[in-house]
Length: 143
Image (cartoon, rainbow, N blue to C red; front, side):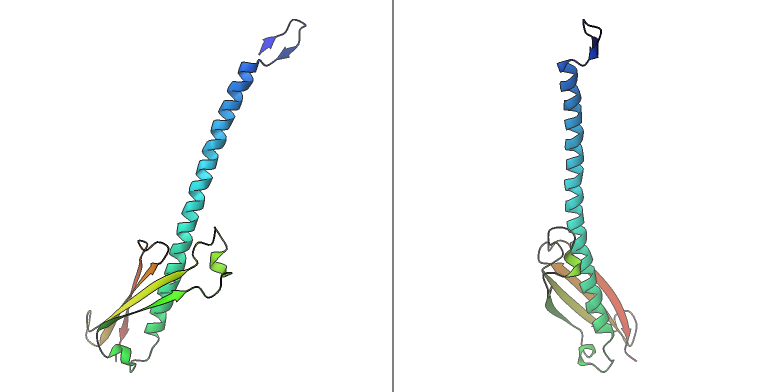
């Protein structure tokens, strides 16, 4: 800051330009962090929905009665889960992430870890990002 001829003080144009440049660099850094946070949130939503689908499939299989034919032989089955409504509460955050199709497959192995048990492994792959697989394993007693 320089003292003017008349005794008043003020900033020079160079000082103002330097201050504005520093401020702009700070704003760009904050904008970059915000963009990264939005992307991370979208991936987290996809993972949460995949986890929920896997837990639902596993709970459905483990709740079946022992006499159900599904537990009679070792095998693999699959089906596709599609979000039934575009306004699902799981998709509020982000730009619709978490919504869409999830391919779920399950494998039932009889007597794998102990006699008279069935091990159920559920794998869920979101169609938007097949590399983000969720796997859950449960065991059911067959007695």
